[in-house]
Length: 110
Image (tube, rainbow, N blue to C red; front, side, top):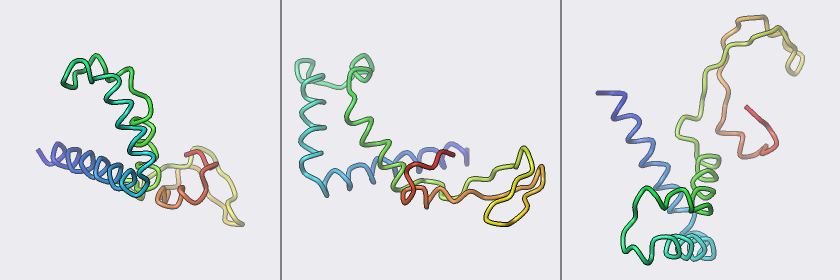
C-alpha cells in the first residue's frame, strides 16, 4: 500500500511541475494544447489509442522530470574501481547519485 501511494504522489508531482513549466512559458502551453486538440478534438475525449500519437506533451513531461526529479538521490553500486576527482572508489562501493544536479549538466548520462 505504501509503495502505491508513493508512486501516485510522484506521478502527481511530475504532472504538477509539467503544468507549472508550461504556465511559465505560454508558447509551450499553446503548442501542447494544439497537439492534444488535433489528436483528440474529433473524439471529444482522451483515450489510450491516441496517446501514441502525441509527442510534444511527452517531451514536456520528460523535461519536467529532468528539471524537478521526484527522487533527487539515487543509490548506485560501483561495478569497477575508479577514481573520481582524486578519490579512489573501490568495487561494490555504495554511493548516492545526486540527479537533482543533472539539470545543470544535461550532457551527463546516468
